[in-house]
Image 1 (cartoon, rainbow, N blue to C red):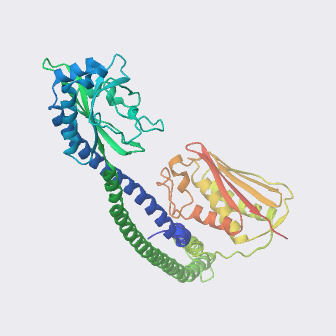
Image 2: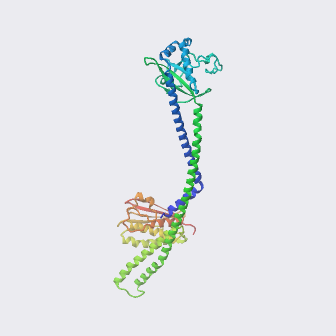
Image 3: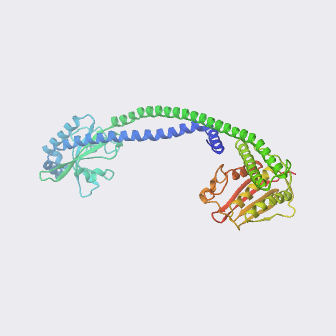
Amino acid sequence: MLSIQCIKRLANIQKILSGCAIYIVFIFCALVAIVITFFLQDYTKQLLRERLNERLIAIVSTASLQFSGNEIETLHDMGIDAAKTDIYKINVLKLQAIRSANKNIRYAYVIGQTEDPNIVTYIVDADAMVIVPTIDFNEDGVIDGYDISKPGDEYDATEVPAMQGPAFESPIVDSELSVDSWGTFLSGYAPIYSKDGKSVGALVIDVEVSDFRALVNATLIPFVLFIITLLFLISFLTIFIIRIWRSRVEIMRDLDRQKDELLGIVSHQLATPISALKWDFEMLLDGDIGEIKEEQKDFFQKLQGVAAHLSDLVSMILDVSRIQLGRMKVDRTELDLNTFFDDVLSIMQAKAHERKINLSSSIPAKIGSGNLDKRLMLMITENLLSNAIKYTPEGGNVKLDVKVENATLKFSVSDTGCGIPEKDQDKIFGKLFRASNVRSVDGNGFGLYVVKGAAEGQGGKIFFKSEENQGTSFYVELPLGEN
């Protein structure tokens, strides 16, 4: 069964989630959807691009085989004079035939290398024999004869890595699309070899790929629809799960409440007969119902001790139940602090003497009074002092320090006992929890839980400092209130 702390934490989380859970879910799912959409669309784009690259490499590789390396080398060496030869015209016609074979091929030409790797020259161009130019290739604002590429014209390849060597070594495709005023292009390159295997030029084919970009953009639509559907399903399932979770929290909280109420009822019903039994033993020991033998007296004293222990345990369980249910009753009355602590010490001195523990105190002579609950104060001080005495070895020291500062009662109980292991310190105030180094000593694990509830019930707080095998100091601060 969950503890009340867990139930309260779950309830607090539920309150927080109840107002913003759906929004958080939608925001989270939307971010996930965006990432997934971007990933899928990018993956599809890469896949389509790879297929386009493969197709273009196949086209340019096959087309490059139509050219004679020796002819291209001759034209390259002739420069501008190559335009006057029949060889030039034959190769131009080959380029035009290549372009005509595929409607997406816009430009086809052969380039050659120069001594400067960043500069290439035109050798043959499919548009070289166009009598009337129609495009301002050199972008000088005028369409004229200078817009037709001529053999030997240089081209700055600084921004085209493929032309700086790779195009003359093996078939390759530009890594990026080229976008200009004439459209969106992807360029493919294939080397042209002479008979002796020397690369003498490179065939370049520029393919217009606007359709490719439209196809890539079109793939985004089904992805978006898919993600929207997925987002809807995830949100629906999340809302459904949150509702189930809320109902489970309510069920667990109700079960825990019923458990604590049952515990309180049972403890309350036990309290009366146990108290009666304790008083009956006192009457027997006092001789109110006749003299008893000495050996009987020892036996009844042991039974009286058991009854007293049971009475204290039932009272403790009742207090735990009240804390669990949030029904800790605080009955503030004017409490003389000097008298109160003197009475507590007189009781605890007997326990300390029995265990051969040195119990000392530091209390101002006139500390005054405060508006406090005496029952809860006894619960705090007796539990802390009793624990300190119980977990301190024979010959050890326990000390109670008391002072008042700024209308706040501050007292501490320090011991030279076994201390609390560091791994247990964050759980030490938990119900039924006992430190791992004291489990061989009798105890029920309720004491510090009740102490914390009693301190906080009066608007105060409790904290501690401890080192294993060195001792522990518990500090309590309680507002005195108005007298």
